[in-house]
Image (cartoon, rainbow, N blue to C red; front, side):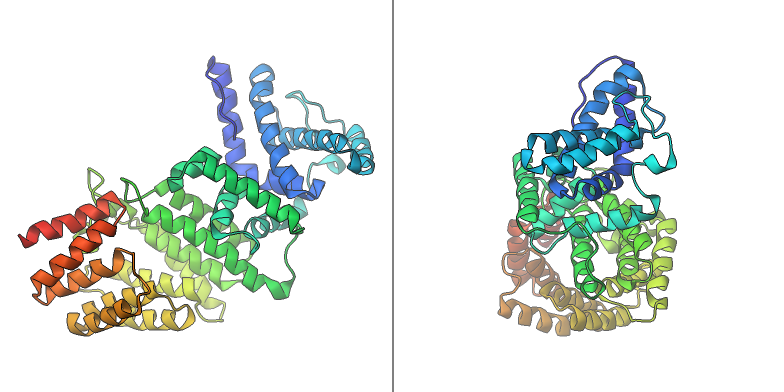
Length: 434
């Protein structure tokens, strides 16, 4: 949302009110305006204009009794202005203009709907609107980077600056991605609607994958000085809860939410007082968030109870549940984790899954068998350029007493790692070899 200028306390109060409403209701506002205008890009633009206008009007007139209604009415008016400017849409403008005149909204802070038929949205359609917004922002015509940026912007309500900070990219880059994404959606004539039932599983996968990317970046930052970005991760948790609420009969959203909750439960123990990374074996498990673990286990139980088997996210959540239940690394059920990774490798094969399975095999059966798996992965070249493979290989070589080879691998991992706390862990291991 637009930045507010510094000012007296009343301006600060208005800014806080606008931010609070936008943070909670932005998805519903943009969704309702999209359904109203039939134009996704226009809806997002006029919603932003309404927020900018609110910063001024609410400072002058006070916060309205129905702030969401005020923003929607203003957004509708800005949309009509846009239609007016676009003379080709004159006929539609006339229809919308007549509706607005009958509706009685004004620009002042006291403007509120006065009759049920004048409500800015149909309450029975709100959930479908938000879900349609998610499917639109995560449409396959967009690149993965564009889907993430657009979802955080229009569904989560984050500003371009906030998204740029979260992903450590320049703000103009984020702005360009969002602009291109909206143009692409318009050019591809992507409809603002829920996809047909037969297309939803595949399209739902795109929505969940975007949330997974967002959470993963928040739980282990790819670059920068911080290991965690909790604000990014918790935004993904919030959006996952929304998807679960909208699609309660689908197992994978429950599985994804379970994975998020169980992973986030460990956040308090994953960093030390100075932000340093704390490895799993060194974490104080008393710091793990037990409420989050309970929520995660409950979500995992709901995914399993739907009777269609666990998908990729549910299986990852089941692995996280093994860790959550264990009193220590040594007492973790590594054999079950190996089996879960084997199942995950069948339904969602990837080199990262294979690497994680190798780690679990090392814990369950010893480093020899695990090193064979890692060497096969190395020979395939599928994780070249990632610090993860040499990091794991170096650790296995250490356990096998092959210090010189381990040093070479850990030095390579440290060079490839772009996250400062993770790199510090690797450097500490190297120092211990001296």
